[in-house]
Length: 312
Length: 312
Image (cartoon, rainbow over all chains, first blue to last red; front, top):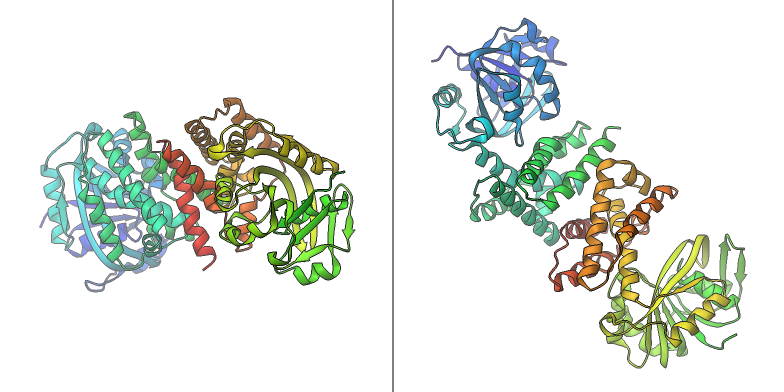
């Protein structure tokens, strides 16, 4: 087992789950909390999981990064809507030559992190995780959990499989989290957007579940048309998503149980939506490459309106 | 005064208002009714209007076109969502060499009418009317009332100002309804869509009033972008809307009182939406000319989904 130390920036349904799994496997983990701080410091973390429930009664809980030790790996598991906090939160807790693991949705977040910290490796991770926070320090893990990760280099240059990726992957796999390593992080991020853009967007705008969006012939067409725009966006940045991938995503969604997307859950809970990370950044990236993703732009502008109205 | 006889197909907030005004001016008017038939036959029509209230205690009310006499002018004032009834309703009540006046929203309705009746003149009218039905046979006219009309010839060929247009216009003007005559009906219909497509569509999809859509920077941009698509649609059919018209429509809307669009009212009342006339027909017309109106298509598909869900 490694002796790498981990910090969790944002101990919610996602960060709390992965942090607890890593700690349970024997690693030293430090958790940053906000509203749940007191509860978790006194009572630890509870994980109810389809893979087996467990409780960690002693956890290193903090409500301030200044009290945290610098760690080998910092996991960013905040929502991207909180990323304006990163310039304050990140530098104190990541070791020189350490790793920042960005477990967030969307595109171009790694570039923002690279502006904040030097002398670190930045790894982007796409999580396929179904978990909810059901109470303070209390996480319910319903399904999945695997992470697809790739290292970030300026402008998403290809990095191949790096040493740091292997090290982090090993820690996660020892903790029972399946990992897939990507040679091309940007391609991976665009591929995830093929699903996230249509379903997250339309579920909020139309108040629809995935099964409703797939049953109606018109939204079914709109979903596919949006997927093609994501493929065009990827292409504008030099990444080729094969046509068959769209069919795969459509079939996969048709076979899924009726699903309320994460953005719809945020909307229903009156939390800010990750519109910029999931819609705004891809739009702007494609636009810089001279490609106008018109239907995605339509969704982006609709979501910005709804997000603002929902919280005012 | 003329001795032209009028039939009103659809005696609601619009057809009831114009029919009553024509009858009050001395013309013979025959009204087709459905749910309000008994009430109107017994008690007539009540119009509360900003231009003066009036009651018509005796009206020619029918619940069946077979009992109606053929008339010189038939006004189609149903919602377009009822147009599947026209092949049954229209032929019995329009005289040979008569006029069908289509007071409906959207595009290409005149072409549908031309398939149903021959040996008639078809005139399309765009109504700028703010009125509600507040009870059976009881109409509240809040504002405006003017009609812009033009004659239809196969494929919207230009007709100039025709004799039939002048005759009908004269009857309306005698009844106190301001009329503008168009040499180019298709251009007039596209121009009305510059307003109707963004505001009707987004008001339903985003549950927003016109003022909210104009205050938010993102929907403000989306509105303008949709207007440009309408202009592109018009151009694809050979009609040029000047750029300045968009600025005029935006300014006009900003200065308007907060407004719930007619499509939003239909939606809130769980009535079918005029999605095909206002969105589907323009889309298909532009597509035939090789132009893909992508953001309008996005709205169209969203509205089809919402309309179906709203009534199920």
